[in-house]
Structures are given as C-alpha cells and as structure tokens.
Image (cartoon, rainbow, N blue to C red; front, top):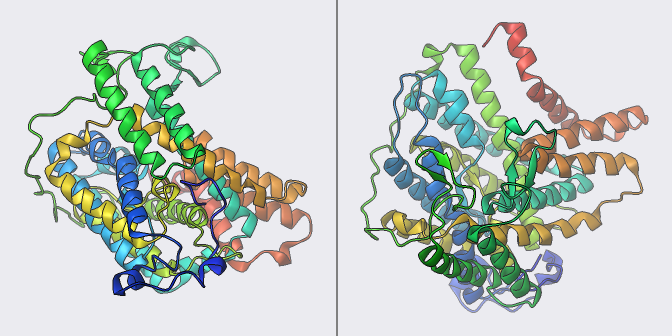
Length: 497
C-alpha cells in the first residue's frame, strides 16, 4: 500500500508503463518504473532506520546480558557493535541484490530463543555456531527452489491473512513498547493477562508522549503528508526530550524497583560521548562443537526449531511487506523472491557469525514502505545509516520506544486493510484466516499464527472432502507444523531434555 498517501498500492501491472528510467542508477533500482523518486526512497530509508534502530539497543539487552552454560556474557557494548554491523551490511545487500525496500537486522524472538533456550545449554560460540548452520540450511533451501515452491503453494487468502496478522502483531508491539498495553502482575490473581497502562488507567508523562505521538503520526499520515512517519517519530522524540528535561520521569526500573511512569526502554537524553568506536571483537567468535557438547540429537532439534521459526517468520513478513509495497502480482507472487529469501538466509548465517544472533527481514520495514519506499534504494539508505550507527550507537538511545511505537501502530492500521481480500462468508476460509491473524499478536509469534492457519486450512478441506485441492507442499508443510507444535512430545518420546 502506498502510504504517505493512504490509497491502495500500484500493482506491478500498473507500473510497467511508468516513466522511462532517467539514468543507469534509476534503471538499476527501477525507481521510475515503480512510480517512485530518489527523494522519496531516501526519506523512506530514514523512516525504516528510525523504526528499526531500537534493535541496536534492545538486542544487547537480550543477548549481551544472558549467561551461557558456563556463566559467560557477551557484553552489551560488543553486541551493540555487531548488531549495527550486521544490520548495515545485510540491509545494503538486500537493496542491491533483492532490490526491495526491506530492512534486515537481528530477529526478535529468535534472539530470545538463542539466549534462553540454546546458550543456556552450551557456550555462546557453540550457540552461534548453530545459528550459522541454520542460516546456511535456509540458503540451501532457497537455492534448490524448495522455499519458493512452498511460498507459491500458499492460498491467496492465507497470504492476505498473514499480512493482516503482521499488522496486528506490530501494532501490539507498538502499544507494548509505548507502555499503553502492559502485563498484569501475577499477584493480581486475575485471568486478564494485560491491561491499559500500569493500573488500568493512563497516567504519567511517558503515556502522554505516546498518545501525542500517536495522534501526530496518525494525523500526518491521514492528511497524506509526505514523510509523515518520519516527521512523527522526530517530532515525538523532540517532545519526549523536552518532557524528560522538565518532568524527569526516569527509567522504568530504578534501583531494581519498577517505576510505572518511567520510560519503557531508553531515556531521551543526549548521551556522552556522542561518538564511540565500535567494539567488533565478537565477529567470527563461533564454534561448531555443540554436537559434541550437548549431543547430536539435541543439536539437530535446536537447529530444526531455529530453521522453522526463521523460515516461516520471514515468509510471512515477506508476504506482508511485498503486498504493502505493491510489489506482489495479482496472484500474490513476488518478483525476485528467490534473491530476497537467499539474502535473508545468508543474513541469518552472518548474524550467527558475528555473534549478533540470527538476522532476518524486519516487519518494521513497513514504516518506510508506508512513507513511499518501493525500491532497493530505501534499503541501501537504511543500511548506510546503520553504518553510521556504528559510531553513533549511543545517539540511537535518544529515540524512546514511546516515540517509535506510534509509527508501528499506524502501520498496523494501514496493513489491516488487506482483510478485504478474505472471503469471510466461506467459513473454510474465514476460520484459518482468523486463526492466522489473531494468534500472531496473541502468542507474540508470527510462526505460531501461520502454523495454526496452515493446519486448520488443511484440516477443514480434508473434512469437507476437498483433500485433492490441497497442494502437496501444503500437506508437507502442515505436517512439519504439526511436528513443530508437538516438539515437546517428540522430546519426551526420545528422552531428549
């Protein structure tokens, strides 16, 4: 979808006769062909970076502070450096090779799995070695054409549901990061898992910053202001800095005690120093000794889980982003899909090789697409900004999640419009689509939503006597998802802990 404007995106068939390329640069990135401009692509790249930059702060807090089996830590500063480096290199490659406006960085969810389920059983180098193997396996699946074949086998309605589910998912991320949606403490003895604010109401200056940012960004986008997303983020960040200077809300945790009205992730203050040489000593700090230290079967199961999570998370993200950017054909196919998925697989391996955890295509790329990004130039700009972030890592912390979160919520509102492509009058379509959409935010996992959609789609058609209509690959992938959801049963039967 074309969002700076809030009109439906131009489909490829509509852009074939667009303005002829002005020069070789234009021809390479297909800027005119896709109905864009250099200025718009640069602006979109800035917006994508603004909404992705938090990973340079958040990933070190997850990966850098989790001890491995031996109690060793990677450290916050080194992880921040390699996180920015991997995001820079792989996002630029996505723009040059895939020629799509997709940003690439360490995958949230996957990094938590690596930190708490993999590294806890082995050393950090061994854990990252498994991540490298996972990425290489995915790249092989792309080269053989298997990954693309699976993609083509997905029904059009499920592709639309995946896009809508991602919209709901990133909206939830925005609300959580902004502090408006919070977990209710277990001590509350309630069956309601979340609530509005820290006590069911909105109070505190940080909540005001998020609400102001949401209204500002929403108005700018609704009025079709070019660069509305970026203006909203910058404007809200400035407002947050002023609020912090005057009201001093403080961080969300002070001396180990929760501060409900504090900033959720980073405090919007100018860091000192602004420039700092990156610590990249973790690059290449990997080992493939996990098969010996934890056993072959355990290592294989861990790699299998990583592959499944990355495989389908990226597939879902790619579907949603391509549809939003108007790059998908009327049948839902995506040009250069093989290249996009190959770069993503290499990014996973590169993330492991740099000890930044598996890197993947980011749903936050939708914010840049929403600001008009349609070509790989958007990704190149985003990647160059991540290179700058290597020296300006402290400055990235100036943007609080309360300022970036509103952009994610607005993007979710834009993506959910694709629900119009789903025929809800047919329950055989409606139920799998519904499960796909709601389970992504409810389980905080794109993979779980896709898996539920696949399994229910096949099951309903089988019961209806329409098993022959199901693509063979849909059968195969559905069986894999059944194994994925029942992995703990497999472990108990095989005696693997």
